[in-house]
Amino acid sequence: MSLRFLTAGETHGPQLTTIIEGLPSNMKIDFDALNFQLHRRQKGYGRGRRMQIEKDTAQILGGVRHGYTTGAPVALVVENKDWTHWRNIMNVEPIEGNDEAKRRVHRPRPGHADLNGGLKYNLKDLRNVLERSSARETTVRVAVGAIARQFLEQFGVKVAGQVIRIGEIEAPPHSLPIDELIERTEASSVRVVDAETEKKMEAYIDQIKQEGDSIGGVVECIIEGLPVGLGSHVQYDRKLDGRIAQGVMSINAFKGVEVGIGFEAGELRGSQVHDEIMYSEERGYYRATNRLGGFEGGMTNGMPIVVRGVMKPIPTLYKPLQSVDIDTKEPFTAQVERSDACAVPAASVVMEHVVTWEVAKAFLEKFGGDSMEEIHANYQNYLKQLESY
Ligand SMILES: Cc1cc2nc3c(=O)[nH]c(=O)nc-3n(C[C@H](O)[C@H](O)[C@H](O)COP(=O)(O)O)c2cc1C
Image (cartoon, rainbow, N blue to C red; front, side):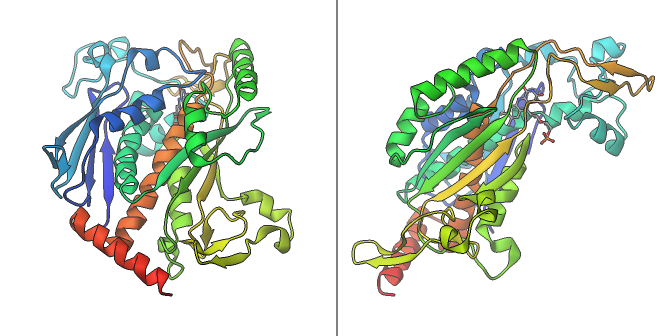
């Protein structure tokens, strides 16, 4: 059985819930490291008040005992701290009262799932759509990715993320080692490596916010320390780059994904794109460059994985956009009480975890075993095979 998870829960419901199945036994769970990743998702310049109200914490309710996985499904929940204010509105039991008491939504917001979901599920209260389509769900996707990260770290794998662009402001390229990249982005309010870009991005977000607008951007995830051969060329749904792309595109507001130089490859010649194959006693086979972002034939090639995703601007803006009331069919312009102007730094953390999850899944498919000991043995055996190739 391969690694899998499902999530459930609403943005103003009591909690988000996930069950992860397929984790091996005897994997140490670092609870602080897990919560650290959840806190990283909540930070970032341009985010609103809710992130300050709620400091997310994961609770594990099954599948872990005395700090180690048992091989059973891991049940994990993250409580919504302001649930108390929504207890009645989100009650699972029928409640008395009018639309006001139920906070019924009949005005679909452009750029959100509201109208499509209402039509598809025949729901006249669009709250039933927006509560689930909210990016709050990415909290538990970070949690499952954080567990996947802990698994991969035991094999020396490192994961980093950075913001490449926020609107008009692009971070200059650099070639920092991954540890330094992690350290510098962690210290930055917008998850970039240099202070000048950070200042420019902050000022830009302020300006966008003042204008009642929102802004998106581009984020990048880098994973180092993976062996050659995760994923496979033999079948479409085993190509790891394809699976990563699906994961990234499933993140709220993500509109595009690229691996390595991605879309730029369409402008360049073959000689400017392909990475030449080299060999040394020390490194074995490697590529002289990494323009293809660690993938050839849907398989890792031993170079770092480099994936970028583009996030559209947040659709809820103070500057009202036109829509149509589903009760009256009359046009209206949306009034917004509270919204973030930019969630790109947070989205960068989400993408890290989504990519990490897909990689961990492929890792387990290749070296699969029921316990960590078995997986380590399989992994070591494969490394020996590569050495003698
Ligand atoms: C980390 C993160 C935070 C987000 N925060 C908001 C927000 O505060 N307001 C909003 O309107 N959309 C926000 N979004 C985007 C919406 O969730 C998303 O655009 C919406 O669910 C529609 O999905 P789609 O854009 O993928 O079609 C956020 C997305 C992410 C990844």
